[in-house]
Image (cartoon, rainbow, N blue to C red):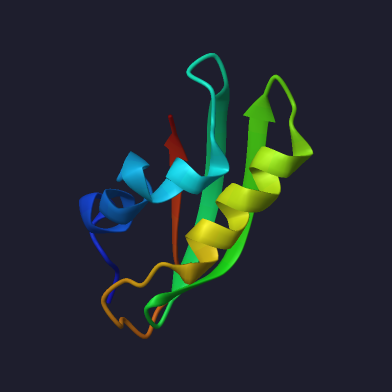
Length: 80
């Protein structure tokens, strides 16, 4: 059973979650996230211009998120 893309994207696009990362408006963040059983099991975060601190912070936030527990691997791509 797969999750709908909207359900996967919703928490990732709640930009208030990333406030502690202090992402400037001029920075674009792109991520591919793998979700299994309600948790992020993999995340590939990139930023333009490249900023390792922002990428690390966003990665921590993503890995602390939860989704509905579905026993299948789902992936989603998101940019903001």
